[in-house]
Length: 404
Image (cartoon, rainbow, N blue to C red; front, side):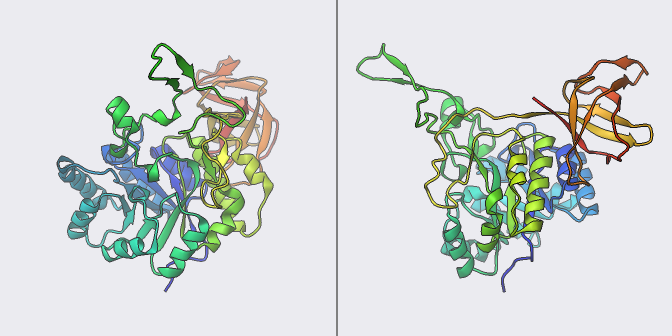
């Protein structure tokens, strides 16, 4: 029997409680969170157990699952604290654990035999026999290695039909083999495989000829590019149906370190694409261009013609995320907003609504702060009431953005 629902699951990143709630509101079927220092994105993505409890409760109220990434490659001294952390998360009601370390998988299977285990992409699973091996170890889902083409994924699915398969569909990609990189550890002492990557693959380098130590050359960009270690960002929005046809059960968006705005837009667009498949709307790709990203690539999925490491490493950014709607009075034409970045009276803002497809625009006509004083601009953490030129309702938790 093939383990696959009619539509694939949309799995969104949740770097903190706000991002978890954002992902849920904008259409995720499941979210993944980090297990503190035991996940591969430790900086600024650690949930306290209090927030994890709130997040799981919120997600489950909306019929959304929560997966815990506890996927470092562990040393002996890591195993007990990892198990202790997982035990707390199991009590709070996580739906599955994402693990890469074989020894830890064995321990978890003994301690929590009913807990679903998803094998992390770090385990670089690339063939059907490896999938079968992990299935025999009690793993319920495989996050396949990003080096696979969709044709190879389809073959794995045909060969092993009774296990869930997950693939990344969007976001930043690591240049190393399934993310197992030693550069950060070697250059800074901070291990990527322990969740502390400093991203040296994104840095700029100089070339030195060993026989002429005084001669140093900056590796400059030409028509063929230069950042040879720097991967573009994955974007498969134009190929959602091809991923469905390959038998993928879960579409994973990368980005626990990204903003709530990134999570909202990426989740909203892939939700539309999955629900509408096989139809495709070019506006979806245009909207994904509006979140901060490097140049997009399809990686290895469609073959190896897309040279993903050529080009500039800089982010492209068209919009600034400036606020979250906390309330709306359409009769008074008033929005209550928690500002997240600078904007001013006279600016044209756009409303990204979790309950509406249309992106609405309005010009800020007036802003009043919490003390009742008229102000000309708002900054991060300011709470302001805005007058907007329309009598339409704006859902609470809609996001506001300003074109740069």
